[in-house]
Image 1: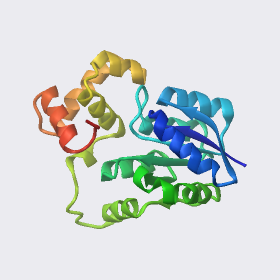
Image 2: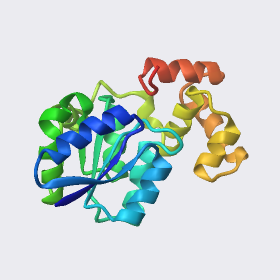
Image 3: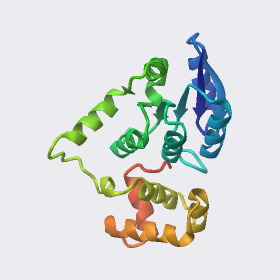
Length: 212
């Protein structure tokens, strides 16, 4: 049986995904996590064959989970299963170490197929994700966004600021100083040509970096 770690902050979503996975006949959800911190703990504890990870999770977000899992368990295939179709998430997730990327809308048709592909050592990307990555390598990609200039950590700090977290809360989440977070905030304001946290939040919402 393929042992699956399922990380998503919505219990109803996890229940639906668990049903899809276990109806396959050759897979079983052996660990679940409602946030990023639990996902990292359960991965270390249960040694799954594959991790299915959402991007939008409390505590430690999915991009950070992917980064840390890839560093500590480099042979663990990671499949992103998310609501986000935006290019910045597809690109950042693959850069962080994910081998697959599908959306929750396509989960009933693609989840089992994607898990099997990753277990076999291949990548699996939804059609939208393939298009995003193809556009990225084309010269003169007119869909380029200021977000592309942000580092992974800057993107994460932007999302947390937009969700109303304080510099101290963000510092505790990533194990850095409050001063370091403020440095990231100032970099964001400069790179995005914005003036304050309110404008950062508005920018994040307009670019679908946070869920309302």
